[in-house]
Amino acid sequence: MASLHYTTFIITALLSSTTICFAFPGFSFGWGLGSGSGTGEGSFGGGGDVSFGGDQGYPGLFPEFYSLSCPQANDIVMSVLESAIVNDPRMPASLLRLHFHDCFVQGCDASVLLDDSAMFASEKNAGPNSNSIRGFEVIDEIKSKLEEACPQIIVSCADILALAARGSTVLSGGPNWELPLGRRDAMQASQSDANNNLPPPNSTIQNLITLFRRQGLDEVDLVSLSGAHSIGMARCTSFKQRLYNQDGNNQPDSTLEMTYYNDLKTVCPQTGGDNNISPLDFASPATFDNTYFKLIMWGKGLLNSDQVLLTGNVEETMFLVKAFAEDDALFFDQFAKSMVKMGNINPLTGSNGEVRKNCRMAN
Image (cartoon, rainbow, N blue to C red):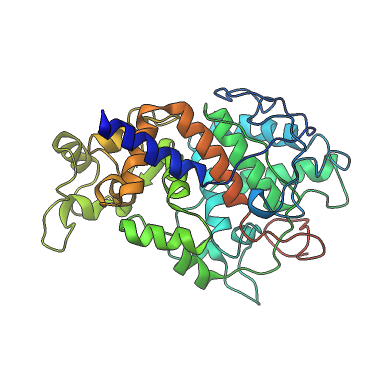
């Protein structure tokens, strides 16, 4: 009983230190906690009058940003997403990942979407992104339809990434949230920052904590945002070392559950097959839920960066994996809050940056 009380105290203390996701009226959002599996009308939040800024958000970003200039923006995003997901069930995870890989490099400024130019090397060709990130054509389609509906370059590519990430979560059965908008787009990219700031799949727990703290995100954000791996796939090259040479001794990772380990070997042979794929959550790979955390508890996390949330001997992350595995509502609530917090990483606002007409190149 004492242990249970202690665990509850720790989790409460951890979660109470995170960013709170306040509600805003407008932008066609309802309010209420639920699975958020509709088309974007229901959302987390409540009808408060608290403005974003300080610890609760970023000055210049607010959900009603397009309420006059392009009120149908979210509906257009959701319509394109629905069609894209029918054609490619992997797309929600890919678009979530695009937003993450954008925000961790120069902030949430759509720099990840820029192609190579005479002025800079594209982030698309950085080590963590090359032949890996995808979904650009969906972003292009959203941008094209928004330009038709709301001409004069109204909706930024950075906001499209944020809207697409939220919509992808919702359409996969995950939570919805009140999304601050008003980001502007970068005019250059940083391939070196992409190589240095994006966590590799074989990260240790300390490396993950360091890279997340570099972005102003804490251990609670690390664990909750890792829950995005509830959907999507990973290439063999991202976890093969766990099967055959985890510690440089030609042995598998001892934390892998044996049946799961044997199954993975059939997908990823020791030689070749690097581009074969395996679901990050094999139990419900297309549904956003808390099964990801349950699998980690059973030694069935796919990536090293997944499993070390539990086995890395960091008390905070261990407690949170267990808490989210036991309570999907707790996970959904914290995921929404951490997505808002991540989306507030160094956005360009006001007169900074630009709103691109083509997301692949500066104006």
